[in-house]
Length: 97
Image (cartoon, rainbow, N blue to C red; front, top):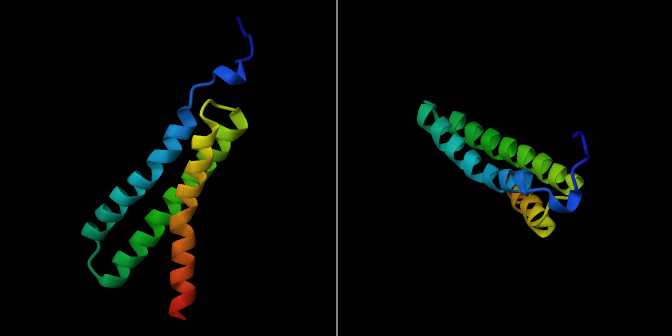
């Protein structure tokens, strides 16, 4: 009854959740911009939403790879998708200075 799960048969639950986090981050950014009153608050909202969703998505992708879910290549793609906005923001901040 309490048998360990076969790693090769694990459903790609965390991988799919990791791929959905950028969409959630974009929706959160738009909601925060709509609620903010100033330009600086809107920029801060986008920054927090993008970095937060990227961080959560990266953790979910790492969990999917550690769990050895099916479609492991999709977990690697999820890592790249989730790290791209953070790298883009870092480059934008460095180029601005």
